[in-house]
Image 1 (cartoon, helix red, strand yellow):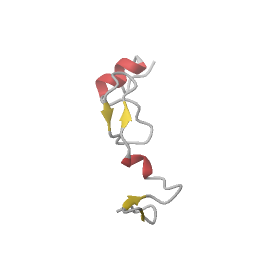
Image 2 (cartoon, rainbow, N blue to C red; image 1 turned 45 degrees about the horizontal axis):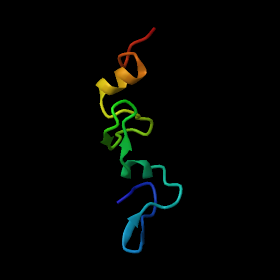
Image 3 (cartoon, rainbow, N blue to C red; image 1 turned 180 degrees about the vertical axis):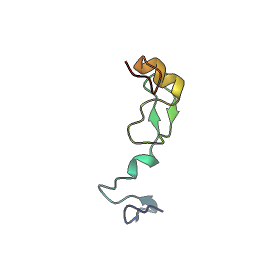
Length: 65
């Protein structure tokens, strides 16, 4: 059930309405650092864990230069 759109059924498969802002939650992504599949917890997430994010981006999360 999606609170952001009218969920529809296409060929028996539940689908988000076109343009739903919450549709990104339904798809696995590949970690930019280690290549593992993961489900993101926020839209811009590009790594599967904090450790991978630190390695990929080069800085510990929350640090300021």
